Structures are given as structure tokens and as C-alpha cells.
Image (cartoon, rainbow, N blue to C red; front, side, top):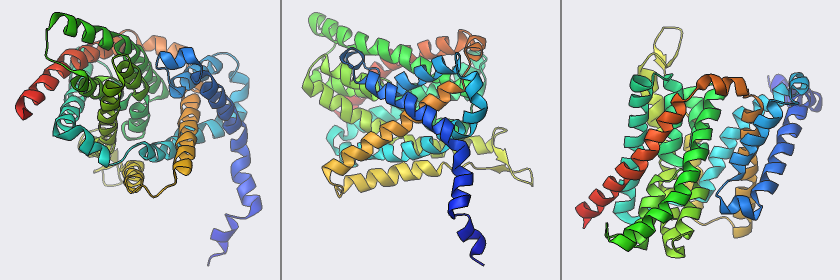
Length: 360
């Protein structure tokens, strides 16, 4: 009875399964290695550009220049990277978080994060479909990137939303544009607030605001450090709590999509819920990390491996994205992201001040 199962793990079976994937996996591995090296350069670090951002840009460049002749041989490995390596990367992303982080920011930080995520994503869905007439998948992906944690959230939402590669790339691009802008703008606005006394905001409160509203973790670090190390510490912890909302967000999104026409249907015509199992893996890994069972060296190595996996997935996405598809998307996705950026800045500030006033 077990012969078929055992034969599937035999050396010939494994070779047959993995050999077609090797060219594509080697290609995305090479691109991710280049991205990791470039992301380590001081100039890119100072501008908050992560390896994930560099990887997708490198993938787009190669994908629209020399990739066409390589595509037939590389397709299997590139597809594997986009699907399975992405999910593995999201699960291991939990190693960057602990449940203790929640206690560090208190009720105020948690409430700010929840309100910012819910309002930003809801606004993205409503404006994207009703005002800008975008496809709902595109609006959701842009909303997820703006609301939670940038490129990682876009990539995590893609299996649930089932968006196209071009839509994912457009969403990631908006994160790069407006996240980078916020990284420079926030410290300037903070200095203006301090100079003119417009708001009573100290470094810790600035950190709460930054962590709750800036797109990427790297951008949060840069915006926080531009003010002070104390502001950066609070901002990063607030951001990590916001990242932790990714798992419940994906589950709720899956349940919501299953109720509408976008749900995947079974043979009876009823909507079937697409359960994002990797989201539960993400929470489980964060829980394990909260127990501090892993040696520091092993945890650091796993986090580095996670960065590599996510960079490979982003490179694979870039390889399958054509510039023509980005041009076809037009200005509407960028305009939606611009409005969401304005909401994160001004609406997020209103949420920040309201929560602080409510909780004293």
C-alpha cells in the first residue's frame, strides 16, 4: 500500500520533480543574491530600500530584457518561487515578532494599528472600485500594502485575492513610491510641529504615529531614526504589532471574499473559503519566537533565510511582470495610493490624537 508513496520520494522521482525547476530557481536565487548585496549598500540603506524592493525591480528589468529566451526552461522554477517560497517566507516572517511586543506599545499602540489597518483597507476598497473604477483585486492589493506592511502584505494577500502578477507589481510599486516619500516627509513634519507648537507630540508619540502609518519596516526605521533612537524603537515595535495583524486580516479577507462572487466555488456552486494556512503558520512561528526557545544565532540565520526566500519570490514576480501591463494599469492605481497616503498622514494623525485623548 505504501509503495506509491515511497516511490514518490525515490531518487528518480525527486530528480524528475525538481530538475525542471532548477533553472528558474537558480535564476531567482541569483537575482535575490544581487538584491541582497545591493540592499546592503549604505546609500540604499539610508533611503530605506529593502532587499524585497530591489529584488522585484531587478526581476522586472531582467524580465523585460533578456528573460524571454530563458522563460520556457525557467517557468517551472519561477512559478515554484512565486507560490511555495512566498508562503514559506511569510511563515518565517513570524520570527521577527513576539507577542511581548504588544505589551511594549500598550493599548494605545494596538488600537491605533487596528483602526489604521481597518480604515485604510476599507477606504482602498471603496475608492478603488467606486471612484477610480479599478478591478477589486487591484484595489485590495494596494490597500493591503498601504494598510499593513508594504510589499510583504501585498505578497501575502495575493494568494487569497488571486490577483495577477501585474496587479501585485503595481501595488508594490505604490508602496515604494509613497513609503519612500513618507520616510523623508515625516521627520520634516515633526520638526515643523515642534518648532511651531502645532501639536503636543513627543518622540514616543511620534514613534507610535510613524509605526502605525508608514508602509515598510525599513522605512519606519529610517523615519524613526531621523528623529531619535527612542522614537525609532517605539516606531518599530508599533510597526511589528501592525505586521502581526496580517494573519487575522488574511483570514477575515478570505471569509469576506468567500461570501461574494470572487469566492472559489465547489461543485455545488457554493462559495468555498480559501484558507490562508500560511497565515496560521505565521502566528505559530511568532508564538514560538515569543517563548525565546531559539538560540540567537539560529534565529538570526532563519531571519536571513526568510529574507532570501521573500527576495526570491519578489524576483520571480518581477520576471513575470511585463512593462506593458504596468502601462496599461495607468494612473488610477497611483492616484488611489496617493489618496491612501494622504489618509495615512492626516487620517492617521487624527486617529493618533483621538486614541491618545481617549486613553489619557
